[in-house]
Length: 289
Image (cartoon, rainbow, N blue to C red; front, side, top):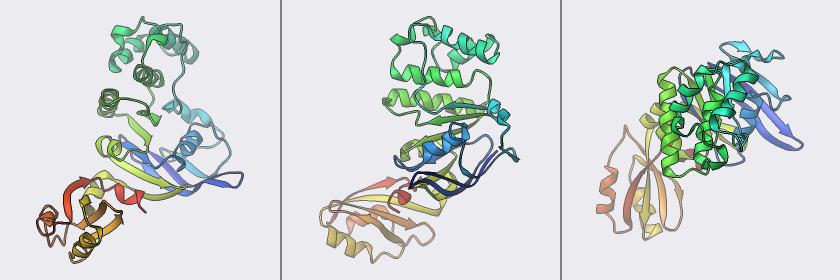
């Protein structure tokens, strides 16, 4: 549905994005994953036309995005924390935006129900928690019924309950046929939510893939250890296992599923140096690249 081709952006001497290319499939929950400062927000701000000078090409449904910004009618954005008239109710805030965008009021109740705020619709936004404001922001971004929803770090600052509420909303929107792009630095968030992912680090694309394909390539584990040298010596003897990162008390390893010469959960029975084994997301390999 959306294609980024050779996107580059430089701020003075800092190259925020360096020749990035990937595609977002239709009806995906797409994760844009990377550590803070990797270039995720810059890419989203380009798509939202908040950054107007950049190199490369973006296509939406095979049409180039150029000086005609009508494509934005198909998008809903939350690029930063959503802002509201705090002294007005949730409903009044949405009514104001409906008037500005020519959207009918009849969508308001449906959206407030979707984000679980219908019973708080007459309350002032100043009385809302941060998580409630995030959910109201999603309702605001959906008022004009866009095909694509773009969310920049939507779970920042949320507790586990708030994160679960956002996840439920996004899964529901996917079922309704929406395409969703979520930027995040959380591996667990991408593993749980997303069907596809692009990993960015230092402005460069490391990988673009479906989550399913990543899980089918290799398995990854964190080994808690008591003696680094002994653990490394033993692991290196295993044909299917590679060490990708090590420190004093833990080692991250990958296992080639096809070779599988030893079950990873049996390793701790063969050496006293490995205390425990925990399965990790395949996305972890890119954070140690």
